[in-house]
Amino acid sequence: MSQSRGFTLFNIKNFKFDDEYIFIPDGIGTCLIVLVSKGKILKKIAGIDVFYEMLRSSGKLNLKLFFLGARDEVIKRAYANAIDKFNAKVVGYNHGYFDSHEEETIVDKINLLSPDVLFVGLGCPKQEEFIDKYKDKLNVKLIVAVGGSFDVLAERVKRAPRWMISLGLEWLYRVMVEPVRIKRLKKVLIFVARSILNF
Image 1 (tube, rainbow, N blue to C red):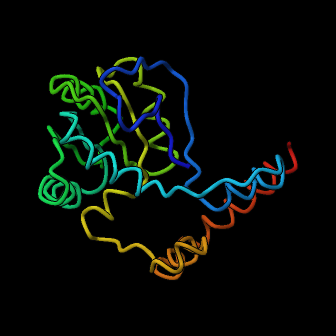
Image 2: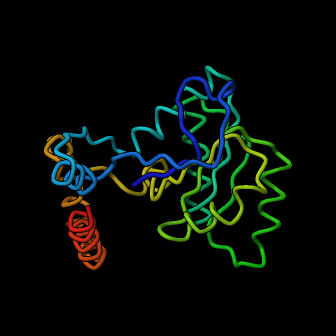
């Protein structure tokens, strides 16, 4: 699930943010949990689609963005593509392969550029731990965990075919392309089962 500290696409400048977390149902598992436990049907919203919409909106709304995550060559390509393809106002970036003793320096770098939105793509649970640890020290209006979205933006990873996305099978495509995700899939299934049983 994508995670953000407050969320809105269109009035970020005037929105008063607090420490509440809003979760976007970007996985079929999330929708299944809500369906079984609450009897409500949620429309799956892919985190990458939200990410792209925010990139498009940033230029129009004059919102400054910062990218944190991925390998150095990937984040540089993602930065270039965000500007070239979305006309996004990305004021800075930093790769995600840093040690804990470098974190404070990175926080200082982000605060110096004072972005409106910080996108963090360090993988789960590292990105969530980073956000929770530094959310009160970061001079930003919005923090969004984007998982592997930088790899997609950098065109290193392709999304599933449209028909698979519409059928909620994007997870299957990702497992087919990256078989190593089978281990992660097992954890997701356990999480879904536990979530349903705990309601």
